[in-house]
Amino acid sequence: MNAQPKHNDANNSVRQALKRTPRAVLRALYRNWPWKLLALLLALGLWAVLISQDPTLTRERVFTDVSISVTGADSLRRNSQLIVVSGLEEEALTARMSVDVPQREYNSVYASYYNPRVDLTRVTSPGEQELRVLTTSTTTYGTVTGISPESVTIVVDEYVVNYRVPVSINISGEYPEGFYGPAPSQDPSVVAVSGPKSVVDSVARIYVDFDLSSLPAQAGEVRTALPMRFVDSDGNELDGSLLEVSSADVVLRTITVEQSLYPTRQIPLSDLVLTEGEPATGYSVTNISVSPASVLAAGEQTELDAVDSLFVVDPVDISGLSESTTVEVRIQKPTELVYVSPDRVTITVEIEPTMISRTFSSMRLSVRGSQSGQSVGLSASSVSAVLTGPENLISSLYESGVAAYVNVSGLEPGTYELPVLIYLEGEDMTGVTYTPTPSVVTVDVGEP
Image 1: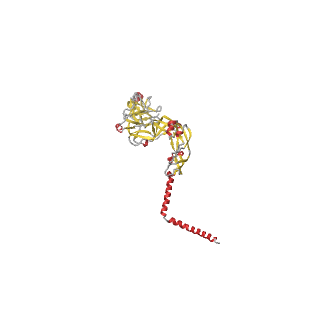
Image 2: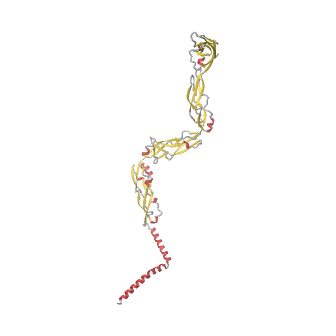
Image 3: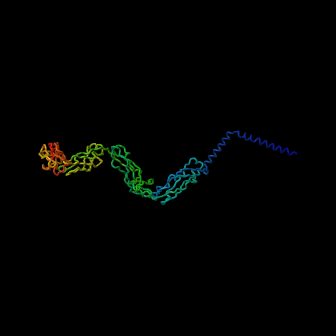
């Protein structure tokens, strides 16, 4: 009976102690709490320092859009005479890389610290090659655990040089108004082209495009650096991104085009000494025309201003000619001028018979066209006449070869005023004119 009360007292003591524990903990926490908080912060700081200085503690960091560098290209060309023609495009040299980075360097590292790269010195032959992407791991910046892609596929070709590729200028546009330029020149005119054999063997010529309208409107020399275009023998343009152009061991990015500009002026052609010799007897020159009458000339301004007219090199020889002629002749370019255009002109020499006049007097006036048995009375029995025509014809006429008459054909009986007509016996009267005196006579026509 006495044991039961003791058990109850023990339970009561435990319950009382549990009730007092939270209050005791709170009193302990509230007592000197600033110092206790400071101690906690110091402990956390010390723990962080110890963690950051431990190189064995790492965190994974992932880099995206990592650029893969390329090494050994020069050595590949120089030592192996090889060149990569494809596979090293920007999109093929972009990777995703995972790195275990020491805790203390996590926020300060860059992808370039691990030097992702492909080494072309590992290539030994042309064709398709697969190169592993290399990286560098260090204790300072951590270990690369993965990179994607792990390799790059490239195509390799032989590296060759063509030492004599001609350079030409493709000219377009017009010179500035009022100026002339001789043919532009390029420097150099022949170059060496090196690169992949498949491309270099196809290069037939290099072109540079030169637009004349882009030149400044001023006299003098202009030098312009122009990019190059590569074409094959059929005129098709080639991709020159892998080609290298050089001259005298100097690598060229452009071709220099030199262009001189001179002022221009229209200069007339002199009308002196356009012909030589004399036409055939009885013929003379009636007109000389030149087409064009002036030409465009270019030169230094002072020299250009000093030239008043231009002359032909060889005059038109009209010796013995009896008809008009048209001849193309060269223009004599003065040495002080650099250009004349056109350099030839057309000279037309009009040659016609020399016209002369000759008087024939006391010519018997006859009647023509009368009917048989018809009487015809004339107010004049003879006339005189002045004939004008080609010298060769008029001067050779005899008095007997010139006849004067009136024509009464179809006239009824009556009195008429009829013109006096002239007839040349056996001669063509084309080009011959005449003035008879009197020019009109009175004619009495009777019954038949």
